[in-house]
Amino acid sequence: MTDRAAASASASSSAAPASPGSDPAAIRAHYGVDGLIETEAPATPGELFALWFAQALSATEAGLLHEPNAMVVSTVDEAGRPSSRTVLLKGYDERGFVFFTNYESRKARELAANPNIALLFPWHPMARQVIVTGTAERVAREETVAYFRTRPHGSQLGAWASAQSSVIATRDELDRAYADLEARYPEGEQVPAPPHWGGFRVDPRSVEFWQGRANRLHDRLRYVRTEQDSATAAPGWTVERLSP
Image (tube, rainbow, N blue to C red; front, side):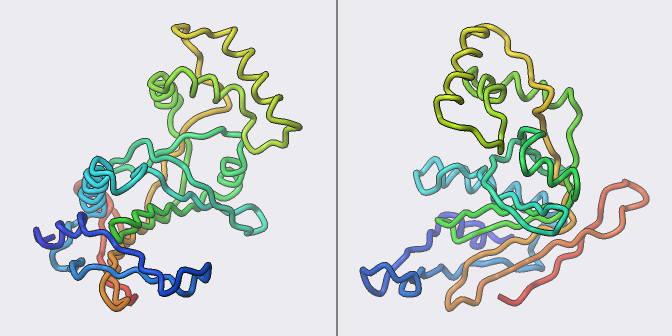
C-alpha cells in the first residue's frame, strides 16, 4: 500500500444533507479520492487489518472515531434467521479474531448450532469498513480466565449478574443481583471467571476491505482463503477486486 493510500485513514467523510428534514434519502456523504490498489496490497488480510486498525486507533486518539474495536457480529439460528449485535474485539492474530460473551446468550447458542459468522467493523469517519466471514469456535478455558482477570472489577461482577439474552421482570432484578455479588466480592477480592462465560475465535475464510471513493465508485478488495501452504501450514490467500 502506498503512503498516499495509507494517508486516507485521516480523511473523513462529511455528511452533507441536501435538506434539514428527516428524509434519509436526502443525506449525502462525500468521500475522498485515495483508495486501495490490489497490486500494492499486503499478502495476507492480517497485515492489512493490522495497518487499518492502527490507523483507526490514531483516529480515535484524534477524537474522530469512537471504540475502533466495536464490531457488528452476525449469526444465524437453526432456522436460518439472522441476528446482529455490537460486540468488542478483544484480540486478533494470524489465528483469527477474538471476542468474549456469555455462552448462554443468543449469539452463543446460535453459534453452537451453526458456527458460521460475520463481523463488520464500521469505521464511518474514515470512510472504511472491514467485513470478515468465517466460523467461530470457543477459545481454550485458560485464555478465557487470563482475559477475565484483566477486566475491571465491575465488568467481572456484571458477567455473573447478567443472564444475557434472558427475559427479566425489571431493572431492579439486575441491580439486586449485582449488589449481592458486590457484597460477596468487594473491590480487591478476586472474582472467578464464570463457567458460562468465555471467548470465541473467528477463523476467517474471507476478509473484505472497503474504502469509500468519489462518485460511489468505492474500492473493495476481498481476501479469499485458499489451501494451506504445505511447508508452513499457514493459510494462503488470493486477492480479488469487487465492483462497488
